[in-house]
Image (cartoon, rainbow, N blue to C red; front, side, top):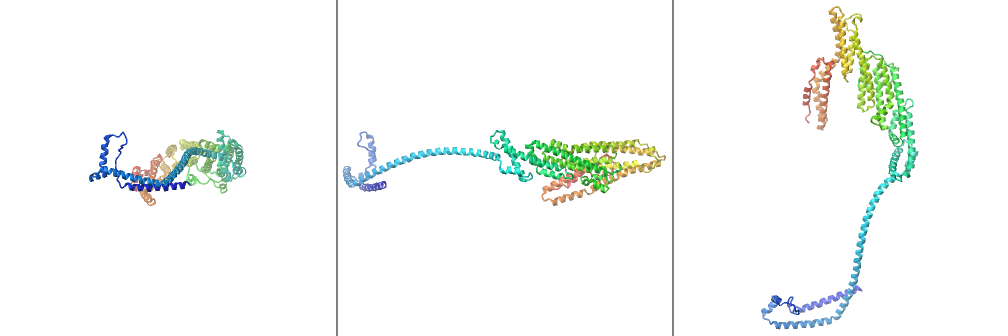
Length: 632
């Protein structure tokens, strides 16, 4: 109905627009008179403004035209008035004619007004609702911010609680594996790691007095006890297996290393059991090593041979790299083959076995028992101490009745080389033992050498029997002995040894002079001196010959060798920077080694060598080497 009323009102408005258009057409006949704002009905108009209005009307186009045409304004005014009356009458007739439409339009406008009023009420209500909705939206926004904050807080709490719950929950899988699976299974080791984490977490929570900790404490403690029991039985079983005769204990040691976490678990959760296992291992291995090396040392003595104490012969081979780190001797095999060995060879075999087993044992202790520094050394000594004490005692017993200075000197150099090996392997466990051995060997060697010097000094030529112009046996012994000591002493030179050899040489020379004085004729004296000096020099000649060949060989070939090295590097390395570094390092080593060779030949033993004059000057060598420095 409202739509119909609105439609009718629109129709009436269109009719009035038509009427207005008609009236406008009639008014177009007489142009409008522009009187401006002139108001003749008021008492308040100001005469001063009349001139302004008159002037404005005179400027009107229609007035201008009437004045120009000489129209009578009064007559023209009457004509206009009549025209207005006519138009008014016409307008009244039109309004009367359209009265019904106007009444209908009035009714329609009234209806529209009513509709608009209702619409206004609806819009007011809607506006009120919108205000209410805006307030509600603002409230919802505030609630959303608050809920978002609570959500973030709950998520943060959930993350921590989730981790807490995960750490607190003891899954059935863990319980089953710890209780039923063998300790050698990988699954047991994995679950043991998890159990260890839960134990540590439970300890941390107990410090914070977390109530939830009490819910799992009982089951975690039971699982810990079960795991400790199984681990203890497993490790002790492996340790007891070491005690079986003919057992290679390195195999169960390697097995224990695979499960080193077992001991770590015990150390963290049951120190008494860990100490029990450690003590059991120390006691077992101490007895095994002592028994093994005691038996081995005893059997080695059965294949010992007696050797001349002034001649080196092939005994020096014990210091060669191939034999020094070669396999240890097998006594029963040597006995079957009726082989016999000098003491230094047995000493080398015994101590290489000690070196090999000691290094392996120290590494095992450091890895399995997680010890380092002084703790590791103390644990090693608690295992090997008894064995090392036995070695020192046996060596002391041997040295107390030993007069073989070559054997003692070879043993010294065996120890010096073994000490260098342990330093290279970064194993400090045997350092004190090496020092203790050297403290036994050096004094005995110096004592034997001093006794030889004193013996020659005290020798009475008249008590030596028949005179003979051939080389004396004392001279022969000295020549062989001094040559042996010098050749051994080259690798690890010792000034004390050189000094003692110098004293020995002086006493031998004095002895030769005293013996020569016993000959009645000058001719026999000279022959005796020549033969004995020749004997002393002949032994030195062998060393001198090797040194001469070495010096002359280097002097004649070093330039070609350096050139060949440079060319080989240039061909082999496409990266010139690498090639430069390599050849510079090689040439630096060359200079260092040659400098060391110079120092060796400057020792008193070699100062008399004529070939020393053929040595290349070190500065000259450095200048020549720089010429071969690659220009990459």
